[in-house]
Image (cartoon, rainbow, N blue to C red; front, side, top):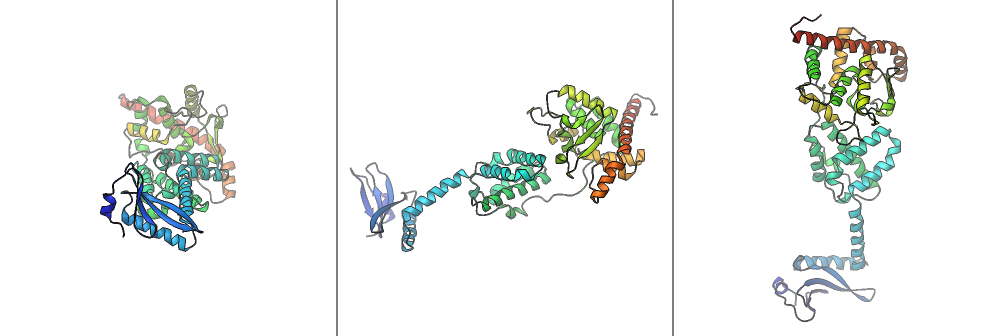
Length: 406
């Protein structure tokens, strides 16, 4: 007679284990302590065997019967259900050890020799900062599209839409590596195509030269109480107008202060070629002051919380916010400010400024020609730009004190 759920529920323990049979080898074994365990008795290769199907009531009578039928299907196909179950358990154990972080680090190690050192470092840093803390310990095969979306939304909520896009791309590359090496079934990132905010392409926020006196005054008087290192970073951003990452990741070994030159290695440049930055007297002075602050650091700008690392991009944005320029100025905005002001006020040709900004050239011949042709012009231009900034600051201070600008 087949079992009922009521019979299973009210089965009493006795002084020894006893069994309540259902059909086709399925039975409920009741232990002396009261535990109830589903078992399946079957024969394979003329040997009687037992298969554990779970604990009642966690596994109901209906579920136990479904498991029995699955086992019988394996038997009809010539497979031992017990062996199949052990294989599944071993695979589950293997999958649990194959976490996203384990696979991602393996992928990074496999790919890094094909990247520039700066690219390899940045990719791993972003994973460690924005991905591993949230899903690094999850088995990669179990990660779903909504779980990936939750991780990306944390970055998106900071307004870092470009970073979110690049993180999604990196996560997808890790998943595709896992698929290729048999640790995952699919890459979930294509499912997120319409789930993230679209990136707004446009110009970076930047003040124009009419607003420059007020900005220089705010930086000089420092009512925002910025650290000296942060003020020097903003000053060097104005004097050199390099990209933010090129400045905050700069190392002392790239500088020849006696020759007043800074050569940024190709691995840290967007266009992947070395870039020469002539240094004005004012820039050299700021760098020597910075050297006295960070004498024992490989980087120009130490991270205040983690001294072995460089300053974060967030420090520049935070400084601009504290100065009252949130939404009005960005690190990249110094490049736009320099280009427009140097062209309009100092009357330099676009080609000279463009070369100093390290913009892409049409071809390799153009790039080589510009590098050789404009270096003297660029040295002169960078000094004139620094002198112009000093004059604007001095005139602004004179007017603040009631005088008249020269």
